Length: 288
Image 1 (cartoon, rainbow, N blue to C red):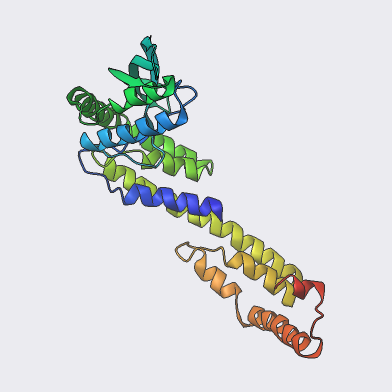
Image 2 (cartoon, rainbow, N blue to C red):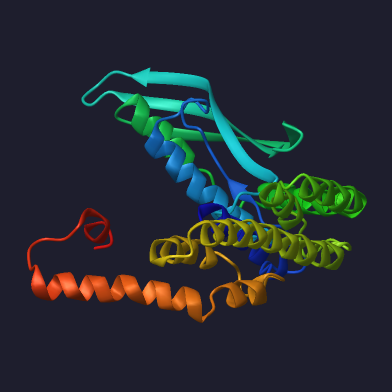
């Protein structure tokens, strides 16, 4: 069931892409240990970066995307002024870079120098991050350039991505195939082709899952053809998607004979409820 929900979510992402036609969705992720900054500081910078992405016309998202924006901080200069309290003056360099998660390489980078003052080193570091402005013109220009480069990338690669997705579907790797297609942004010239491929692959996905569920239900019913077999087969029939090509076969299997057997369990259950309050056989207790 979990896999079905994941695949459905990916399919919806493909056909209901809500970002602006000229913008690419971008995930922000910072590993605060790798970035060499306190977690609170990393969270502050993450929020500023999301705002900058929105300001650039792209659109920050919590969804997993092929390209994501991350950052790390380096201390360039530190001055300590004795007194009560002691003051720390930090000059830091924030290195922002876009990573291509599929190729596992850096796609684009931007550096920004900030300064911060505080009564402790951590406070000075946090205050230097506060100097990071989501409205910085050079930063916005960098993100707009990244947006253009990503669109160019998908315009040149979307046919290869669609071919790869179809190959993955042939080996029943439907979730991975749908994820690859969901990464193609609406601004790409091949977006509609990606949507069409996603619809086709998703149909194959639900047909495959439904076929396996129906086959299992049929085998269980044929082996028993009693009330218990009907109950167990019914659990698998419930997994047959109404939009699959096997739904009518599933309905046909769940004919009056199976329904009669399932009714027997209900009758037995009612009998024990009335005559033996407080006691139930194990197979009925498990149904509660």
